[in-house]
Length: 258
Ligand SMILES: [Zn+2]
Figure (tube, rainbow, N blue to C red):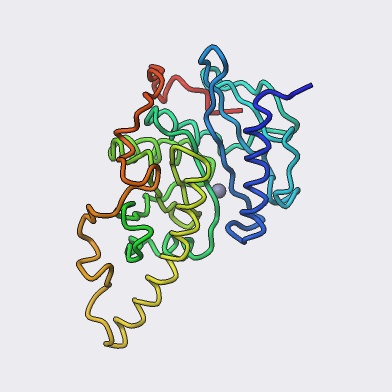
């Protein structure tokens, strides 16, 4: 018998294992989710279980991917417990209907910038379309304050929320994307950017560079020539297939305590 959302759960279980093996998080955790719809269009969140990395080293059976009803917040399938960080995921999804993946990890190179509180200079071509890589104000892990901070910050950037990365102060990264594999690409390319930006910082201090440098021009300029990640050459906001009608949910209505 097939599980609910079997192929999506297999994909997520496989992807988080690859992430762990590539040292894109540590054993303190991280969690990833995707938003899916059943035949009737009812939304669900598929999310990695609590203690995914600590206990299982991210080697998950697809049955360990938890299925949560997006509208009620109730777990409806899956072996294991729902992570307390699901409130951050719910807050992100509630911010924009085009967000289909929330990817949170403790990626080491980005953690350096996240802990410094400094905005990560965005200098590599592969990351430029993401724009600014900002650190959100500190709020403790798993807290309602962090979920609200993420939610409000995503609302503020409007459609860019469909392809974005925030640094979580002293904690990690939070990527929102239209697809799990796009989120993985953002995470990996930003990790490289984090290291390159750090090395440029050393060159600036040594007097070898006047300022951060990217693509031959001002690294902070909007680089219009770079195609978005989602579909090269087509802005994510102009995707031919419409997103389902946004469900009218406010963050306050959602259940955050599981
Ligand atoms: Zn975390």
